[in-house]
Length: 188
Figure 1 (cartoon, rainbow, N blue to C red):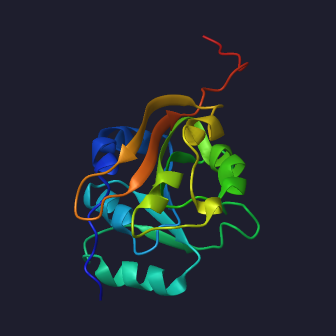
Figure 2 (figure 1 turned 180 degrees about the vertical axis):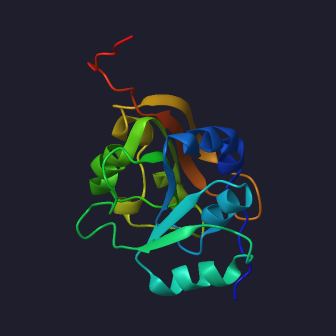
């Protein structure tokens, strides 16, 4: 079994926000793969659901987990149709790392609870200058595209550039919050 990669430094920086957002609903790791962020969230005591279309990667995720960890996985193809198999407004947080499928953006926003958190990090076009990573423009962001894709959300953090570490990557990162319910009357 391959050595598990550590979580993104951006995930670590956002951990307190993710933990707080988990009180609003499920935390979901989209296109979770082998689950480096699913497992990191579970290790932090955050209830989490990993979603991926690859049955073998989900099996590796379960095999890599300590028996005491609690998390769920869902086998689903997020691209066909471009949908998340969860009800609207049920997610306290949505995590997306190193994955881009632009037609999924409306579904990501749909599943966020009011006040829910989005933590998103993926490759930019500048990744092509490095030896690894995607080359297909469908999987690479233009400069400042990520906050534009989620312009309906309140952008809390935005950064683009070269990550540090063993495998540097050119990425864009945002954390953003879904708006509160508007137009809802409150009675005292």
